[in-house]
Amino acid sequence: MNHPTELELIEWTAGRLEPERAQAVRAHVAVCEACARTAATQRDTRDALGDWTVTPPARDLWPAVEAQLEGTAAPARAGRPSWPRTAVRAAAAILLAAAVGHVAGRWVRSRVGKPPVEAAFVESLHLEALAGESAVGLSSALQTLVPDDLKEDLR
Amino acid sequence: MDTGPKSDAELMAAVAGGRTAALEELVRRHQESVMAVAYRFLGRWDLAEDVAQDVFVRIHRAAADYRPEAKFTTWLYRIIVNRCLDLKRRESRRPVSMADMPADPPGDAPPDPIDARETAGRVRQAVGDLPDRQRTAVVLHRYDGLSHREIAEITGWSESAVESLLVRGYAGLRDALADMNEIDRRETA
Image 1 (cartoon, helix red, strand yellow):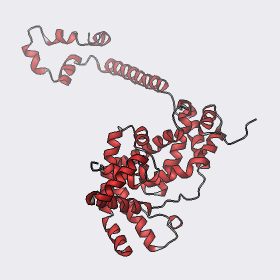
Image 2: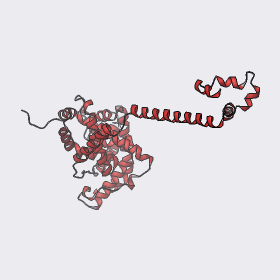
Image 3: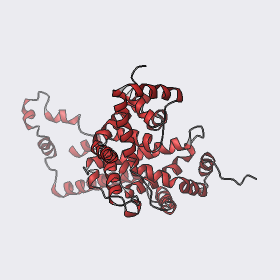
Image 4: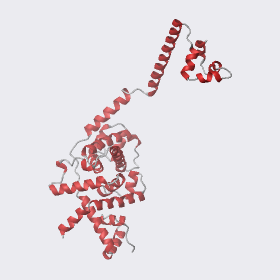
């Protein structure tokens, strides 16, 4: 017989090989010093592992499990808003902020006269350098980028 | 009318039907073994208890998906192993050696005092020091008596991968516990 594999020796020392195979391994180990040594080491390791006995503390987990079930079921239904509602609230907040900003801007402009809106816009984009080089003129180029409602303000 | 104890599969069907009492029975039936398996993985009773509670909560949530064709204990082990591996992954991000972990509570140590407790501690540490996958394979094989195929089913690894992990895991333990075995041999000689 060929040498048994290491895994077979592990299973053999654990008494978990099929009877026929176990018989063959036993016969081999009886005459093979190397396999007998390996099997002895495996048996020692297995026995040592058996020294780690574990006795769980006497504890009833049910009350804690039941509490978790009650604790997790309730917020999922009542406490946490669903994402569509959150999204609607966020969108409403953005629209409100935009509307307030727009009205405030119109009010400020009406008080101080027409500011150089276009120049300020260009400055904010740091496009001044382009203004002199553009053949078609920066003003007309910008018109294509500006939303219609803002064009009204720019006129 | 059949009033005998219900099988795990029958209890799971009842849990899926909304009967909390059936889950309570499953908890009481399996809590010790679940905690023992989790403890062997994690080396701490407080963590093992957290995992065990979480396992039963997950069983409750997943009861509708349970199919009786799958052996309940295999399904149960799968949940335990996944929870333990998740926890170990999280723990590994903040390095704590198993040696730093609290020892077994006094009531859990073998009645035989110092020697037995030291021996058990050595073994616990050696098992805890194995890489996660090797430890998983060895714990399920050595302490829960599962076959290679069952371990493969639980973990989702191939059978040959499980066999390789077992060989490497036992080899690591053999090296880690070699001096213990040497002392034992000298004492019995």
